[in-house]
Image: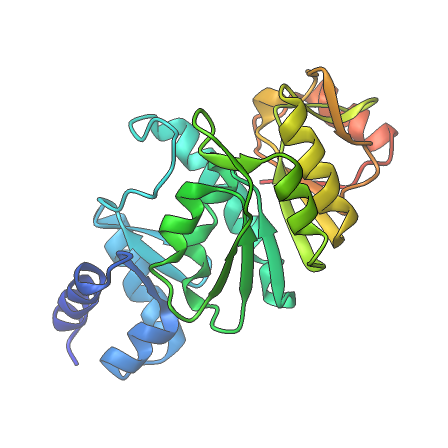
Length: 254
């Protein structure tokens, strides 16, 4: 199949997919080509400004994820994308994961399209709406009181609900992070639910933009050494990165 026709087929496939996301495997099946050829085609389409590549696939530039962040803020979106691409690598080893209601963890959802034997537990209403687009993923919504500001569930019902599950990995975000204090939240209810989730998880992965590092909020979610590792973006200050190294905090900078 000529290159130009393949590119048209890939774009057609992206536009017909409800998620506007396509995997390398899907392209191989559609165009009868190898994975290396599919990746080369995606690289050329990205250079033309038509798609955005991620680990294992690509999405249309026009695709808007269900997220509460300002979609016009390209810089923030790119930072989020790099963080979640790194986080999704850990999903490959899991059967059950937890995603909290933060917009950063919500950015992981379009990248879960490849997984067909995965259970996702979440307290985020926007997360649930996004996950309905993936029929092969089993989704569990945490019941509880609904927060109209964060579009999430919290409270005693939610805490008790989490007792029924044990997850391979919890992907948690935070309002602030300090190398001496750990992850913190501005809301007591969110802090309590995240604590409960961490206690019911084999490992915890903390997703945190660099702008939140070196700050703190009133309610402590977990101590610095609790997460398996922290993922942040490359804008982290050298001073904060040095502190993390000195305190033996495992982190990845992307």
